[in-house]
Amino acid sequence: MAISKDKILSEVEDTAMIIKLAIKAIQKFPPKDLTTFQLDLIIKGYTKFGEEVAIASAHSKYKDIKQIKHFALTYFQEGHGTAVNHFWSELKSANIQIERIDKLNKLLKRNKISSQMEYDYIVDAIVPLQQENLITPEQAIKLSDMIGKFEQRK
Image (tube, rainbow, N blue to C red; front, side, top):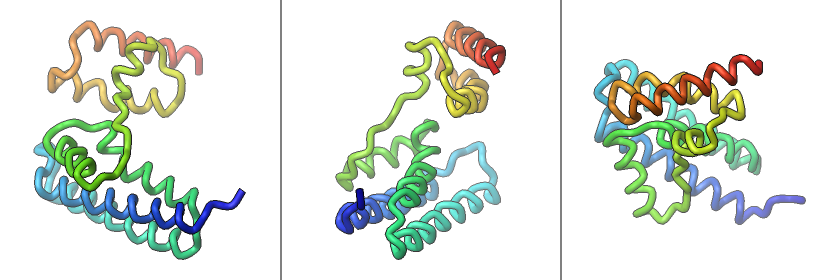
């Protein structure tokens, strides 16, 4: 089934706005743990996403646009802090309907890592979450156990 031009255009507009708001949020509230060089790389990455959306749009490649949108949202879905909160607030103000997924609590409730993507997320996030007291010691132990069980299944 072909995707309508209107649906593609809507996805392009939303994705372009997401990228614009992401850049603004990171510039306005740069994460304190990143160097100027790292921030510049992130901004260049988001700028490249914008260029890729334009290319995908010109060729009506809906799947590519959706994938770029997913990549552009990853930091804001998995991150936390002032830039992340500002981004979601601005997204809501722009009337872009994206659900903010709380992966951490979803995993903790399920008590199981189901995919490599979830595994990678927890492995990357567990130490910063502990350092910033965003999870309890009990939750850290539970996550570590889940990581171990997932690794045994591989």
